[in-house]
Amino acid sequence: MIAAISTSSYLMLAAMLFAIGAFGVLVRRNPLIIFMCIELMLNAANLTFVALATQLGDINGQTAVFFVMVVAAAEVVVGLGILVSILRRRPAATADDLAELKG
Amino acid sequence: MSDTTFLEYVVFFSAAAMILGGAIGVIILKNPVHAALGLVLTLFGVAVQFVAMEAHFLAAVQVIVYAGAIVVLFLFVIMLLGVDESIDLSIEPIPIQRPLAAIMGLGLVGLIGAAIVRADDNLAINPGSGIDVAGETGNNDANIQQLAQNLYGDHVFAFQLTSVLLIVAVAGTVLLTRKWPRDVESSESSDA
Image (cartoon, rainbow over all chains, first blue to last red; front, side):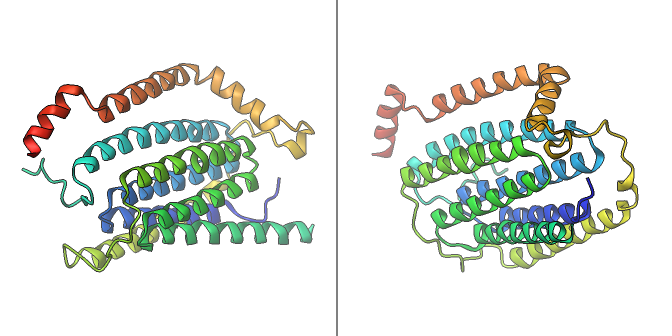
């Protein structure tokens, strides 16, 4: 299959998506938004996996994406569970307020 | 053939615009509900790119699991906690944080871009056994069959560990969010 779009284009797109997600994790203070930005970064990694799987002709890349999706689902479930139990007692808590473990 | 090429460009660039627009929406929108909708846009764009790269099964899973389950979970938690109000984004606790984060983001894109440009020649090597494509083999289920053979053959142990992970995650979440009777009394007395 000769594709018009080169693999590098997909990789650059994934790099930009990852950078936007990392920027969001660093600047946003709402823990829910930080979670969404982590999802953005995971999706960037997935895009890279599929692009390289197609380029290299190796189905293992697509299997890795499958596992990333499962782990992302588990991570969101546990993370939102923790958030619910924190924000129930302290509504409108930001990531900066949750500093009890600070040394 | 040129029509097909043109279409591929149209698909790539419109999906890329969806992905980047949704991602920027996630990080600049004040209301968490709007940010979640931006996330949906990004996830759909990634699903479109998966279809463009002949990963049909992953595109379906992307829409069902990510855009379906995970975003619904996000919206459910936003509504449950009642935090669906606009946040004041002008507060900047650490003054130099945002410029530094922007520099980091641009640097990240620059470095990864440099690595991609450098690795571009090596990408031409094609060592794998090949991915079956529906259009070439004439078998419309080629992608899902090949993926299933790989998943249940080479990675069957990891697949079974995944089920353990999901059970642990579900049990842990129930444990975390459940209000235990004694804890409720003690927390009420401590709050008072």
